[in-house]
Image (tube, rainbow, N blue to C red):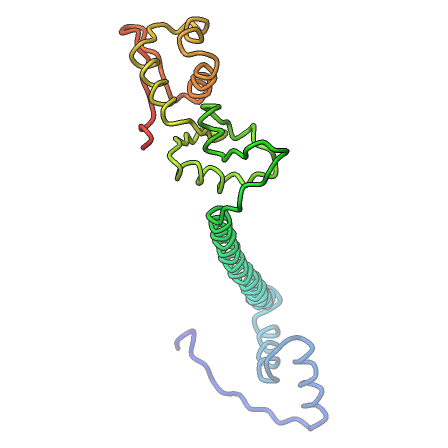
Length: 231
Protein backbone atom coordinates (compact mmCIF):
# COMPACT_ATOMS: atom_id res chain seq x y z
CA UNK A 1 0.00 0.00 0.00
CA UNK A 2 1.43 3.37 -1.00
CA UNK A 3 2.01 5.93 1.77
CA UNK A 4 0.22 8.77 -0.05
CA UNK A 5 -2.84 6.67 -1.02
CA UNK A 6 -6.05 8.17 0.33
CA UNK A 7 -9.49 6.79 1.14
CA UNK A 8 -12.84 8.46 1.48
CA UNK A 9 -14.45 8.30 4.93
CA UNK A 10 -18.10 9.29 5.45
CA UNK A 11 -19.80 9.94 8.77
CA UNK A 12 -23.32 11.07 9.60
CA UNK A 13 -23.95 13.67 12.30
CA UNK A 14 -26.91 15.76 13.36
CA UNK A 15 -27.37 19.30 12.03
CA UNK A 16 -26.56 20.73 15.45
CA UNK A 17 -23.30 18.78 15.55
CA UNK A 18 -22.46 19.85 11.99
CA UNK A 19 -23.05 23.51 12.79
CA UNK A 20 -20.81 23.27 15.84
CA UNK A 21 -18.09 21.58 13.78
CA UNK A 22 -18.44 24.26 11.10
CA UNK A 23 -18.08 27.04 13.68
CA UNK A 24 -15.05 25.30 15.21
CA UNK A 25 -13.44 24.96 11.76
CA UNK A 26 -13.88 28.67 11.11
CA UNK A 27 -12.39 29.60 14.49
CA UNK A 28 -9.34 27.41 13.93
CA UNK A 29 -8.79 28.64 10.38
CA UNK A 30 -9.76 25.50 8.47
CA UNK A 31 -11.26 25.81 5.00
CA UNK A 32 -14.16 23.50 5.76
CA UNK A 33 -15.45 20.87 8.19
CA UNK A 34 -13.72 18.04 6.31
CA UNK A 35 -10.31 19.65 6.90
CA UNK A 36 -11.11 19.99 10.62
CA UNK A 37 -12.19 16.35 10.95
CA UNK A 38 -9.11 15.21 9.03
CA UNK A 39 -6.92 17.15 11.44
CA UNK A 40 -8.70 15.68 14.49
CA UNK A 41 -8.25 12.15 13.11
CA UNK A 42 -4.55 12.78 12.47
CA UNK A 43 -4.10 14.02 16.02
CA UNK A 44 -5.74 10.89 17.42
CA UNK A 45 -4.03 8.43 15.08
CA UNK A 46 -0.59 9.95 14.55
CA UNK A 47 -0.13 11.28 18.04
CA UNK A 48 0.63 14.77 19.42
CA UNK A 49 4.13 15.03 17.83
CA UNK A 50 2.92 14.52 14.27
CA UNK A 51 -0.06 16.75 14.89
CA UNK A 52 2.25 19.48 16.15
CA UNK A 53 4.32 19.23 12.97
CA UNK A 54 1.20 19.57 10.85
CA UNK A 55 0.12 22.57 12.89
CA UNK A 56 3.55 24.17 12.50
CA UNK A 57 3.46 23.62 8.75
CA UNK A 58 0.09 25.33 8.53
CA UNK A 59 1.39 28.18 10.66
CA UNK A 60 4.43 28.50 8.37
CA UNK A 61 2.24 28.65 5.28
CA UNK A 62 0.00 31.22 6.92
CA UNK A 63 2.99 33.40 7.85
CA UNK A 64 4.38 33.10 4.32
CA UNK A 65 1.10 34.30 2.85
CA UNK A 66 0.94 37.22 5.26
CA UNK A 67 4.57 38.21 4.56
CA UNK A 68 3.96 38.01 0.82
CA UNK A 69 0.89 40.24 1.19
CA UNK A 70 2.88 42.83 3.15
CA UNK A 71 5.73 42.67 0.63
CA UNK A 72 3.32 43.24 -2.24
CA UNK A 73 1.89 46.28 -0.44
CA UNK A 74 5.39 47.71 0.12
CA UNK A 75 6.37 47.16 -3.52
CA UNK A 76 3.19 48.87 -4.62
CA UNK A 77 4.04 51.93 -2.49
CA UNK A 78 7.61 52.00 -3.86
CA UNK A 79 6.34 51.84 -7.46
CA UNK A 80 3.94 54.69 -6.74
CA UNK A 81 6.71 56.83 -5.23
CA UNK A 82 8.98 56.06 -8.19
CA UNK A 83 6.30 57.22 -10.63
CA UNK A 84 5.68 60.39 -8.64
CA UNK A 85 9.42 61.14 -8.49
CA UNK A 86 9.76 60.65 -12.25
CA UNK A 87 6.85 63.02 -12.87
CA UNK A 88 8.43 65.57 -10.51
CA UNK A 89 11.76 65.44 -12.39
CA UNK A 90 9.93 65.93 -15.68
CA UNK A 91 8.08 68.97 -14.31
CA UNK A 92 11.31 70.50 -12.96
CA UNK A 93 13.02 70.00 -16.33
CA UNK A 94 10.10 71.66 -18.07
CA UNK A 95 10.13 74.62 -15.68
CA UNK A 96 13.90 75.04 -16.11
CA UNK A 97 13.57 75.04 -19.91
CA UNK A 98 10.79 77.64 -19.75
CA UNK A 99 12.81 79.88 -17.39
CA UNK A 100 15.88 79.59 -19.62
CA UNK A 101 13.85 80.47 -22.71
CA UNK A 102 12.32 83.50 -21.01
CA UNK A 103 15.75 84.64 -19.77
CA UNK A 104 17.21 84.43 -23.27
CA UNK A 105 14.30 86.38 -24.75
CA UNK A 106 14.66 89.02 -22.04
CA UNK A 107 18.39 89.35 -22.73
CA UNK A 108 17.80 89.73 -26.46
CA UNK A 109 15.21 92.45 -25.96
CA UNK A 110 17.58 95.24 -24.95
CA UNK A 111 15.86 98.30 -23.42
CA UNK A 112 16.92 101.78 -24.55
CA UNK A 113 19.90 103.05 -22.52
CA UNK A 114 18.79 105.20 -19.57
CA UNK A 115 20.11 108.68 -19.03
CA UNK A 116 22.19 108.85 -15.85
CA UNK A 117 22.84 112.40 -14.61
CA UNK A 118 23.97 113.68 -17.96
CA UNK A 119 26.64 110.99 -18.42
CA UNK A 120 26.59 108.68 -21.45
CA UNK A 121 25.32 105.18 -20.63
CA UNK A 122 27.83 102.40 -21.27
CA UNK A 123 26.84 98.92 -22.28
CA UNK A 124 28.26 95.82 -20.64
CA UNK A 125 30.61 95.11 -23.53
CA UNK A 126 31.83 98.72 -23.49
CA UNK A 127 32.62 98.46 -19.80
CA UNK A 128 34.42 95.17 -20.38
CA UNK A 129 36.46 96.83 -23.13
CA UNK A 130 37.62 99.37 -20.53
CA UNK A 131 38.00 97.03 -17.54
CA UNK A 132 39.51 94.15 -19.60
CA UNK A 133 38.32 91.38 -17.24
CA UNK A 134 35.13 90.76 -15.26
CA UNK A 135 34.73 88.13 -12.53
CA UNK A 136 31.25 86.70 -12.01
CA UNK A 137 31.68 87.01 -8.23
CA UNK A 138 31.88 90.83 -8.56
CA UNK A 139 28.48 91.19 -10.26
CA UNK A 140 25.64 92.72 -8.21
CA UNK A 141 22.83 90.32 -7.19
CA UNK A 142 20.27 91.94 -9.51
CA UNK A 143 22.19 90.84 -12.64
CA UNK A 144 20.89 87.69 -14.33
CA UNK A 145 24.21 85.92 -14.73
CA UNK A 146 23.50 83.38 -17.50
CA UNK A 147 21.84 85.96 -19.71
CA UNK A 148 24.58 88.56 -19.08
CA UNK A 149 27.47 86.25 -19.94
CA UNK A 150 25.60 84.98 -23.01
CA UNK A 151 25.23 88.61 -24.12
CA UNK A 152 28.96 89.33 -23.61
CA UNK A 153 29.88 86.20 -25.55
CA UNK A 154 27.62 87.19 -28.45
CA UNK A 155 29.28 90.61 -28.49
CA UNK A 156 32.71 89.01 -28.96
CA UNK A 157 34.04 88.67 -25.42
CA UNK A 158 35.92 85.57 -24.27
CA UNK A 159 34.06 83.75 -21.47
CA UNK A 160 36.17 81.39 -19.36
CA UNK A 161 34.18 78.80 -17.40
CA UNK A 162 36.10 78.00 -14.22
CA UNK A 163 35.00 75.53 -11.58
CA UNK A 164 33.85 78.26 -9.17
CA UNK A 165 32.79 81.09 -11.48
CA UNK A 166 32.94 82.54 -14.98
CA UNK A 167 35.34 85.22 -16.16
CA UNK A 168 34.62 87.51 -19.11
CA UNK A 169 37.73 88.84 -20.86
CA UNK A 170 38.07 91.47 -23.56
CA UNK A 171 39.20 89.56 -26.66
CA UNK A 172 42.09 91.89 -27.42
CA UNK A 173 43.31 91.72 -23.83
CA UNK A 174 42.95 87.91 -23.90
CA UNK A 175 45.18 87.57 -26.96
CA UNK A 176 47.73 89.92 -25.41
CA UNK A 177 47.61 87.99 -22.12
CA UNK A 178 48.27 84.65 -23.86
CA UNK A 179 51.10 86.13 -25.90
CA UNK A 180 52.84 87.39 -22.77
CA UNK A 181 52.22 84.40 -20.51
CA UNK A 182 52.96 81.58 -22.93
CA UNK A 183 55.75 83.21 -24.96
CA UNK A 184 57.39 85.85 -22.77
CA UNK A 185 57.17 84.88 -19.09
CA UNK A 186 59.93 82.42 -18.15
CA UNK A 187 59.48 82.26 -14.38
CA UNK A 188 57.03 81.01 -11.79
CA UNK A 189 57.81 83.73 -9.25
CA UNK A 190 54.66 85.70 -8.58
CA UNK A 191 56.31 89.12 -8.26
CA UNK A 192 57.98 88.71 -11.66
CA UNK A 193 54.76 87.39 -13.23
CA UNK A 194 52.85 90.37 -11.83
CA UNK A 195 55.44 92.75 -13.23
CA UNK A 196 55.20 91.13 -16.68
CA UNK A 197 51.40 90.84 -16.87
CA UNK A 198 50.26 93.86 -14.87
CA UNK A 199 47.59 94.00 -12.15
CA UNK A 200 44.69 92.73 -14.29
CA UNK A 201 46.76 90.17 -16.12
CA UNK A 202 48.09 88.88 -12.80
CA UNK A 203 44.53 88.57 -11.43
CA UNK A 204 43.57 86.52 -14.50
CA UNK A 205 46.72 84.39 -14.14
CA UNK A 206 45.94 83.74 -10.47
CA UNK A 207 42.39 82.56 -11.30
CA UNK A 208 43.61 80.20 -14.04
CA UNK A 209 46.46 78.89 -11.89
CA UNK A 210 44.25 78.24 -8.85
CA UNK A 211 41.83 76.33 -11.11
CA UNK A 212 44.66 74.15 -12.53
CA UNK A 213 44.10 75.48 -16.06
CA UNK A 214 47.76 76.46 -16.60
CA UNK A 215 51.01 74.76 -15.58
CA UNK A 216 54.66 75.80 -15.44
CA UNK A 217 57.31 73.50 -16.97
CA UNK A 218 60.53 74.09 -14.98
CA UNK A 219 62.64 72.29 -17.59
CA UNK A 220 61.66 74.51 -20.51
CA UNK A 221 60.75 77.47 -18.24
CA UNK A 222 57.50 77.89 -20.15
CA UNK A 223 53.89 78.25 -19.03
CA UNK A 224 51.50 75.86 -20.80
CA UNK A 225 47.68 75.96 -21.06
CA UNK A 226 45.57 73.02 -19.93
CA UNK A 227 42.37 74.38 -21.48
CA UNK A 228 40.95 74.52 -24.97
CA UNK A 229 41.46 77.89 -26.60
CA UNK A 230 38.08 79.73 -26.54
CA UNK A 231 36.79 80.81 -29.92
